[in-house]
Image (cartoon, helix red, strand yellow):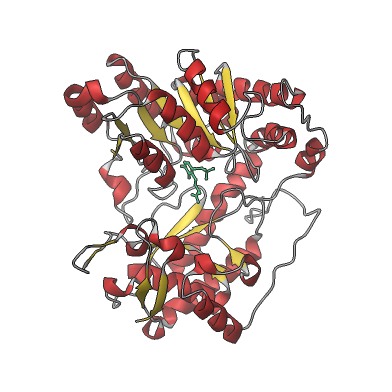
Length: 456
Ligand code: F0G
């Protein structure tokens, strides 16, 4: 067998990307106030801002789009998708929403109350925000290894069961359900082991609490289980996913990830206990229960996408992509969260810019440098995202300075990754000339999206 793992698809429709000159990028970044979120996408060569809703649909999905039934109530497309989701999740009740955060908002509004506490491995930003919005404390309980970038562990997304048990004992009355995010995006796209999901569900059950899974990247998680957890080598990824879901009582999904679509999401429920409340809120926030926040054609594309997202050749290539970039970074002496996760590589900016003070935002500086040197756009996950300006004008800084490069599905080929690896290695060589930034204007919340900067 040849060693090269090829993209398991050929390209039917192409979208040009535009190379800019270094001088142009300097001008564009200055105009964006040194904030890559403020760039126009057409000025970016390789856009690795997110893997969410940015992937390429297949010919089968585009075909299915023409079959969309746009009826307001009882559309055929709803029943087609319902069947696919029931089969994968083993749950009876499917509630469509327009994306993941809407599923969270609808579910939490229906079943949480002020003063509650919800543990998870790590809550994603929108999950945390939606919980906090209804007055719930969102608590991260990932295992210690999950917070150490350089520590190797096959399932760094696992939840700390002892910590959860202590919580259930002490704060049980405040806990409406437990959550777990697969894969753990906030912790580096790291997988959760089947044994951990099973034990977590059993623990919650012992205390009479349901398990709600955040399943945006369930297929990638299932593939990691197949590759890393003993006993699953010969189980199909589909059967692994079905077993993962068998431990849950409900799930929220952003279909923009492993659903292989550009927009969409859903809630699934095992019992009808929460169903009436959920559907009432859905009608107010999203739409009638057979379309939620989605068009009929989007329901069709998702029905196909969920099946394609479970294809093992695709998943093997998908996970290998991140690993491949990781190997190149290793060779260049660039640190990153190890092992590489499913959908992204998280570069440890302190290994590229060791001498830059945190007050100059090294991960932000690295993000800017990747754009200036190679037209690549990533996301800072560091002190710009998580640091805070206090009333006295001083700052708190984040413990890690990471740059996330998240890969849209079926979109970039191996040469794009080779190119990116060269750019990153080149930036490391030039580290002494990379400039940090100072903030000139910032909003009160979520400052990284709109912050304005100047060179430090
Ligand atoms: N849960 C997880 C684990 C996510 O990664 C996301 C989105 C959501 C929920 C919310 O879903 O965007 O459809 O509303 N993550 C994207 C990202 C935005 O870039 O990681 P959504």
